[in-house]
Image 1: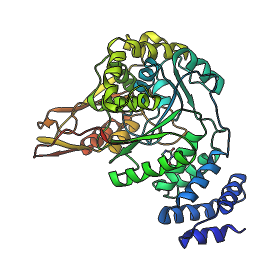
Image 2: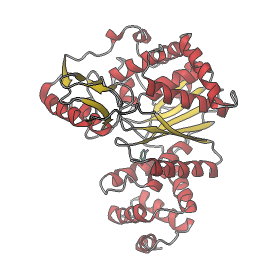
Image 3: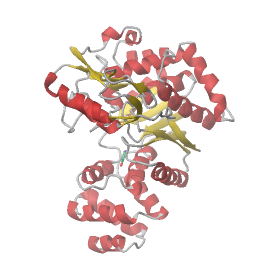
Length: 434
Ligand code: URA
């Protein structure tokens, strides 16, 4: 078999056989296919898509390129939730303790943030002494005590995705529906769970810029799951503004804690409630999603979800008391305010721009090697639909190093789209696909 023939086949929109896909991917993993040929194949895929059979084979081979993990010793209904990447996305920090308080377990691999999107690992690492589980056995031990099992991705799980993603990143082939679907689902299928719930972000700050593409991505991921005998549910959620008000790391954990105390922003609550309700329904505890709300509110109002988070932090090496003492978080040295330059209504807050403004002051990584400053971040004070007056405060920047602060201020001003006509508040959940 020759790789060039497979590239030409994809270029001509012909379907590749299982053997051909297997040959291409396994030889690439072994280092026998050069990056220039794989780049060409990825670009042909970007334009010509994959059939359902091709996608399933591609995903299966990716999954089997490394270790798969089972959690047989965790005697709980296991939920694996995954977001396609957002700005201000602290859903896991709220959701995992809520699920634990509802008697379910989370067994989830989390990533580090890169570019304008943040990662759950970085947010938790803003807690002094906090150590993420590094191995399956550590995750099982923490999850059995607290119901929350989170672990960083290791190089041994789907190593082919790591190699392909790095290449996609520099060849303009990241935003391809079959390539995203196989990348995400290969990692989900490598981990045991009872239900996979995917939060597909839609809008300015997301890979999927519009609802049609997001629905197509959701459909393809559900199909892959079904073929592999797994339950997959999807929420399509809005990323035409950051989620909640805080963007950074320590500040996102405190916003998550406030949500567990019942003081959370509406959009964050909406997503957590939707995903937790999907989990309850998948477990068979409720028949309709609408029955979930009262159960979730109960574990928030009686403090049991907050207690789960505190236990998880203590079990992971941090001080669980910080859920009631925010002085235990790293503190930024300075704060500066950002004032609106216009009168009107906020019609959009370009999430990617806000994510980059936070990255600029050290809250995120421009390259994998960058070190994060966990104390710094941005607080937005106005959301889509809010009225603003010229000169009114719209954001606060918390920082340690003033080098890029003015740059971040300009980016925040640029991110706020303000119009004279009244604008409706946005819904966080655009659609739920079961
Ligand atoms: N997240 C992933 O894991 N892979 C992609 O390709 C895009 C988002």
